[in-house]
Image 1: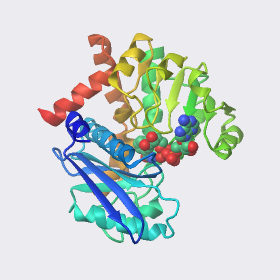
Image 2: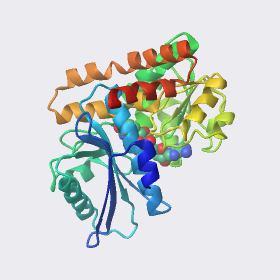
Image 3: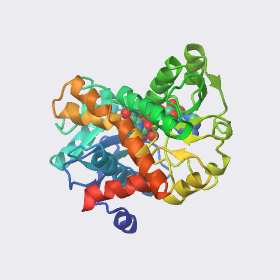
Length: 339
Ligand code: NAD
C-alpha cells in the first residue's frame, strides 16, 4: 500500500472501524495543496479490504486532478465504506462515518458517490459539517450529466468535425444517476442510443422513454458506434478491452476508466479520441464545491460551461504534441499541483 501511495503521491490514508454499527471505512487524502480534499463516498462491496484501499487511493488522485483542472481551490480525497450485507441500521452506519470524517477536522469533505444517496449524506450531516450533496444542497448527478453531454459535443467536434449529435450513435454503458440523465439529453439532441445496464429495469425504461436499443452488458463495448460513453464503474478500458472497441471516441462519466496510461496510448494508436474522465465528468464536483461555498446556480452553470473548452484545449495540445489527451491532461494537472 505504501508503494502505491508513493507512486500516486498520496498524502495520507485513514482507516476506521466502528463495531457497534459495522462501519469499515477508508478515507484517502491525495493532496491538500490547493485546499481541503473533497471527493465522494462509495458504499460498495469489495473482494477484500486491500481492493477498497486501492480504489480510494486511485480515486482520490483523480479528484486532485479534477479539482485542479476545474480551477477549484480544493485538493482531492475519496472515501470508501465497505458494504456489509448484515448492517441493520444504515442511518447509524452513516452517522458513524460522519464522526470519522469529523475527526479529520475539515481536511476531507465528503459527498455522494456510487452506492450512496442524498439521504445518506443527511445522516452524515448529523455528525459533521464537512459534507455536501445532502437533500438540502442537492444531488450533483444531473450536473455531472450536463457536463458529460457538453463534453460529448466537444469530443464529436474534435473527432468527427461536428457537434451536431443528430443521428450520432452513442453507446451508454450504465444507466445510473449520471448515465440515465445523459441518455435523456442525448435523446433530446437526436442521438441514436445503444444502452446496457446490469439492471434490466433501467434498460427497459430507456427503451420506453428514449427509444434506446438494448445491448447485452458484455457486448456493448464491441458494438459499432460513434461514441462509447462509459457511465458504470471504472477500469473498463484495459489493454484487451480497448482492442474490442469499434467507435471513433470514448467520452463518459465513469471515474478511472483507464487501467493505466499505456491503454491511452493504445486508444491513440487506434485513432480513438479519449476524453479524459476527470475533465469531462467534473460537473458534479463543480456543483458540490461551489454549492458548499454558497454560490448560486447561475455562477455554478457558468463554471460548468467551461468543460467543453477545457477538453478542446487538451485535444488541441494532444494533436500538436502527438500524445494521448490522457497524458496531456495529466501533465497539465501535475503542473498545477506540483510546480
Ligand atoms: P450509479 O451507481 O447511480 O450508476 C451506475 C450504473 O452503472 C448502475 O445502474 C450499474 O448497474 C451500471 N453498471 C455498472 N457497471 C456496468 C457495466 N459494466 N455494464 C453496464 N452497466 C453497468 O452511479 P452514477 O452516480 O451514475 O456514476 C456513474 C459513474 O460516474 C461512476 O464511475 C462514478 O464514479 C462516476 N461519476 C459520477 C458522478 C456523479 O455526480 N454521480 C460524478 C463524477 C463521476
